[in-house]
Length: 86
Image (cartoon, rainbow, N blue to C red; front, side, top):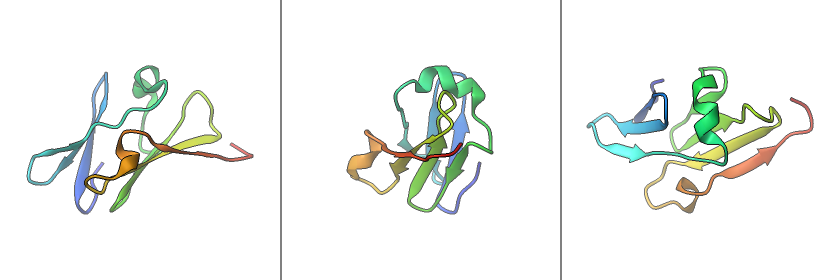
């Protein structure tokens, strides 16, 4: 998936966010992410200018949001959003 400032690569083990200069920007992880990586597709992950949102496959009412700004506290610990309906 391509964004304006970054792009995402997903392999069998992890999510990788790189800048267009080729530098690794972020390797986001959340609770249970290792088992959910094979289920990721364009419908459950979204890349913005300064954030990444990943829908939780084990619970469709949860969305994990990561900050992409350098030095942001939400890079290691995502903000989790719970919705009432899937």
